[in-house]
Amino acid sequence: MSDAPNPDPADTPPETEAPDRRSFLNVALAGCAGALGLSALYPLSRYVIPPEVVEAATNSVTLQIAAAEVPPNSGRIFRFGSDPGILIRTPDGEIRAFSALCTHLDCTVQYREDLAHIWCACHNGHYDLNGQNIAGPPPRPLARFTVNIQDDQIVISKEA
Ligand code: FES
Image 1 (tube, rainbow, N blue to C red):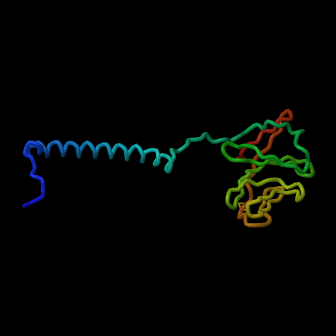
Image 2 (tube, rainbow, N blue to C red):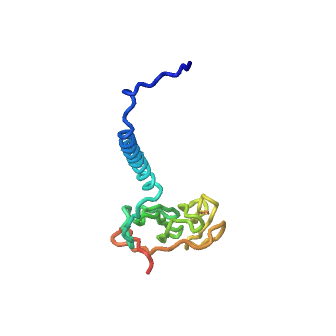
Image 3 (cartoon, rainbow, N blue to C red):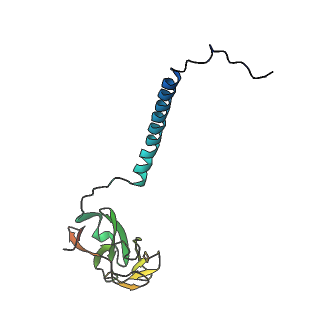
């Protein structure tokens, strides 16, 4: 004698309806899983591959500080478009400006009053007052900008 329950034929669905319902549920579940996967992947892909930012080329900026506010043997960082620039006043009183992106690995350089020249803290790179690389790993001079002073306002522009 067997202990297995005897299936009641009324409880089992007819053979002809089961595949249709099952296949519909499979398609619906696959669609939901696909939509869920896409909704998770889309923001992830936008994060990994950010959209291209179109930026207008900056050729000139007017600084918010007056020339008289920059003492000899000092430097200040300013924004030149999306990049930093450095304005220096030499110990002799001449105002000069350069790109502040170190030519080694793009760290932002700074003016060292104690050394009286431009210095990069990342790997101890040194530039003289003409932006020439003089010590450390920087391979090239800093890009130099043109400085115009009009009514004590400092206008920095790219050299032509
Ligand atoms: Fe300036 Fe390396 S990034 S010295």
